[in-house]
Image (tube, rainbow, N blue to C red):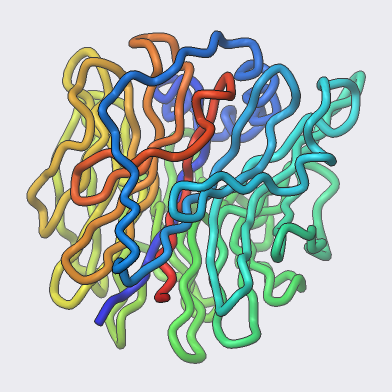
Length: 383
């Protein structure tokens, strides 16, 4: 018996400064792909071993992007093997117009692979990002898009229906089969980070900004808001999972003295995971039986450490000698899979995509061939 629950977190070059001004990061995402292309490439020397055991019961899909001197190319890895999404379309020297794309989330149903993300465009005086998803590598338009910033942050499939959560302009929304459902009216900036579907119920997690550094952590059930914070602090929901009648959400809140407290809620009941003086986050939540897993990163005073928590107990994935981030988690039986990214050289903000199984790094093919790469989402598909 196995369960799949996963999510993604936004790509960042400077995690600490970006978390201090989340909206500013959203408004500059297109710079990420351009900047990443100019970082130096260093071949990994770790003793990572790809698991080729053919008796494994799941296929492991990890979504993100790769980048060199050309534009960023959305991509995913199936059991460690790289698959570029429409590389002919994105692989070119950036110029005015399309500058590349990022894959934020992945889901698999049968033989179909669905990936959600965003494309970045830049012009002489303006720029936009456009939400998009790909089915088996082919783009699918999301209707009702904004004329400004937009992103598709999370994807879920239920039967023949495809759900994508994100935002358009200042409106939190999701799309069902490409058609938009607005969750807010645009009065306040709001963003949807994660989506989960259970039966006929659609759950979307995110936040709404009601003042400077005053974010209400909230989720919507079938379009109806449920607030999990009072808006007096900087709070956000990053991931949501529905298991039967239970709803689990992960997130964080920044206290008045600058401490970031990682949290998750089960049916609205709060569980604090840990606190940090850094600018990290709990990025993803998964549930297997009675066990709750949350992936994220936590500062050690010098660098950010990728880790996950099982029922509140932390498990470190990186050694703390360079920045590393856990962005997404999924569980199959006794196996715990985490996707993320880690610096090649400490302090460089030059990242390489990562995947860990039960705390051990797994090779993702071809990452050494690119200047930069990141993994934002993981999904387990039963064989």
